[in-house]
Length: 290
View (cartoon, helix red, strand yellow):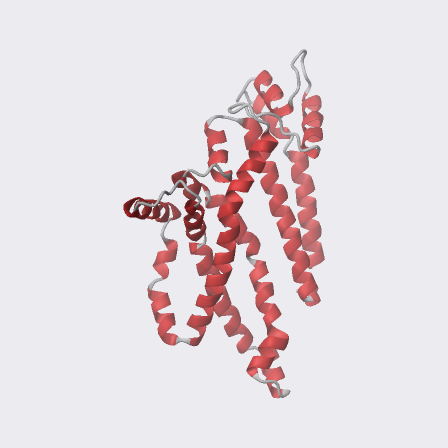
């Protein structure tokens, strides 16, 4: 099944790349923008004569394959440079946020699994993890301003990472507790204990990889969550990353940048999905039949 999922992801990526070049055609023929604006900005084609829909499609498809998405109509910069710059800025928040989510989330999961008292406190404070991200952003900005810390310095990435990791941390902790409970009560776990292994030995030798597989199963969802909501931390903190630049491009009708971000996001998430499925298959080949 995992090999099929990898194949489906690759097919989806290929199909999406074939579909995306239809966007300039739709923009032109639906009257959203002038052909000159779209063709020159998005396709880097000189408009000297009428261009057919097929020429537009094949030209843009060729540019996608060559990672040439044209020039931003707002900044005049190459789209590829805009996208790479935005990815670099966002990575400073997203990568630490993933580490914080898994690290602190696992620690919380262990604590609530072992201590009923801590679990009660956890259940009563769950509402905190559903507070909108933008609220945390402005609260942090207020605290930084109140304490006199320059939030325009690199310290902003520490706070954006913490804010981004709040809800993912909750997901990791909840998933860890659930996985621990299901494995501890499973026949698989009982069988190894009957065979003479202690609980600690059973976890170390046979069960740890199941927790890792479970973690990988929602890794992609956490990345999607952070990409989807990063705008709410980048804008207040003045970070010109993916979220900020993508929304800015939409507001300016900067079609080359919009399309460039869409293509890069699809490729990136598809690659992450394929890697995750491959790692899961390497950890436990039985997931093929799951």
